[in-house]
Image (cartoon, rainbow, N blue to C red):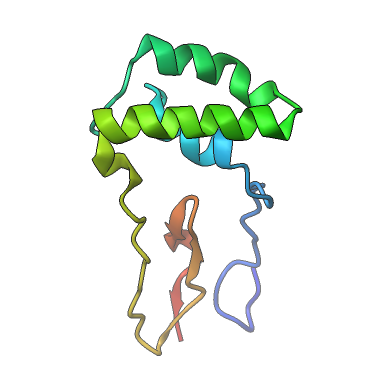
Length: 114
């Protein structure tokens, strides 16, 4: 325990993707049954495309298939493509150790009073 700071000297360490992967991180959860979006899309045409799309190395083919999925979902469930919200937190000055990660939310175990 770090007695000078008044809280345990521990660190929460986890790995999160540090590169944007629009197919696996954004497209797949939005258009398949792998997430909790209200549409919970289960279209065979989209599922067939998504089975091969992330593994294509030809960027022209990737763009064409992504455009095809966008067109299908635009007509099937257009609200999926609404903008993601920006998260704001109002933290009192006496609260320290507030850590926020957009992938997981805030991690409250590091918060403490000063």
